[in-house]
Length: 262
Image 1 (cartoon, rainbow, N blue to C red):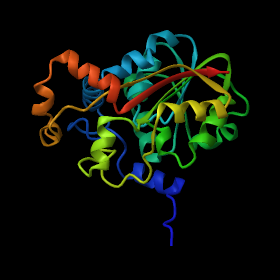
Image 2: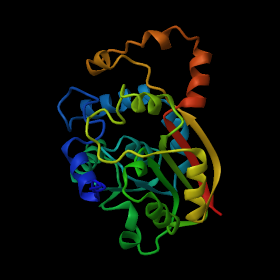
Image 3: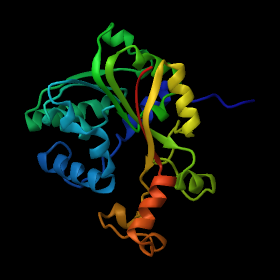
Image 4: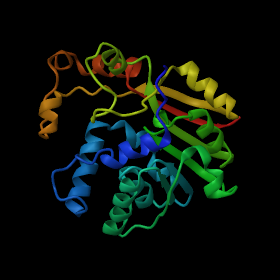
């Protein structure tokens, strides 16, 4: 008998059990020090996020984030002056994000919901930017989610997403049994995509690619990283920086996609 494909409930339960990046700080969860350390660690390890999100370009504009997690990018959109809305499937993650906004005195709108049925939440509302970083590869039906997203875009809107790249260093390690897609074991859905697959998915949703590139190879020894030490794996440490960057551009785990309505 073919095993049943994981459901949205399976996905929600997984992320409720441990919200993404929850352990980026050892300080008490919910304190300003905790949130400051989470942000510092996230952008140290994934510096490409800042240029991809381009937070300050959205000052005075409406931003919808699909899957806000515990709110690291969320607070940066809000700090930059965007009119921010976040939706999140995980109840526990959403609680942390709301607390985070209170700690920093920021304004935002938050809805708990499913990216595959956004029309049920927004009823034709349009956004200047829809942003989703590392989320849509976890949903059971990404095509349904993209179709839903396209309905919330106007002709000048931008949609930015990061999904996992099939043609990547990390995926090769996963296929060899030497790695796993998420820091915590047991993620029910973590799909990967080729550039052609992403293009076809977007076209089917009435979207066209403006820019598409790969980035990010995690270079650190995991055991040291868990102890907040940044020891680089010897095979990456031996590489000149320009060689490592070339490897990230060709075999990065993060496929960064910018698109608009076709």
